[in-house]
Image 1 (cartoon, helix red, strand yellow):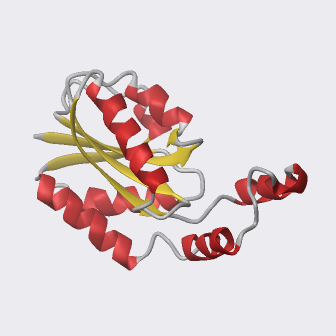
Image 2 (cartoon, helix red, strand yellow; image 1 turned 120 degrees about the vertical axis):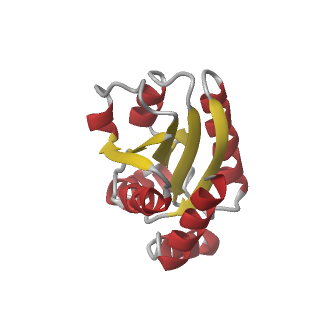
Image 3 (cartoon, rainbow, N blue to C red; image 1 turned 120 degrees about the horizontal axis):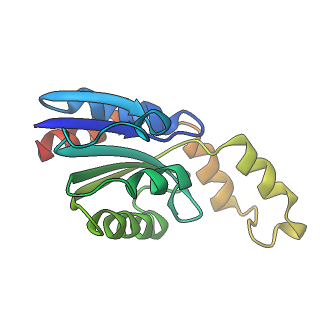
Length: 167
């Protein structure tokens, strides 16, 4: 079985998380950025491990574009987001990833881990009038501080165990 491991990363979180997944993949494997993978022949690969970052409650646009090319493969997702990985938001993203994968492929699972928010997102959160959308609650500020510490060693272990269990 040949595995292609692909990542789309804005802040470096997903690249780091996907590299950890790559380390745990068994057998012949190749690691590429989503930009590099856009022109790769996918026919030799049985399985795709795809790292994505969450954008507006779903996979980022480059990931969605790449996955439109993928058919007849086993799909494993590694996702990073600013919210807690056991939050309702993360659960909804996981459901969306499953639906995207099952359109043309065999879905094996999604592992979500927290990651630092991008500087551009943090800046845009401060621009909304009266912070109507992104209210600066104590809970939100705490989550942003916690997210800045991820992905970490605990996340590495979680990702690698998740991948190993699928092999």
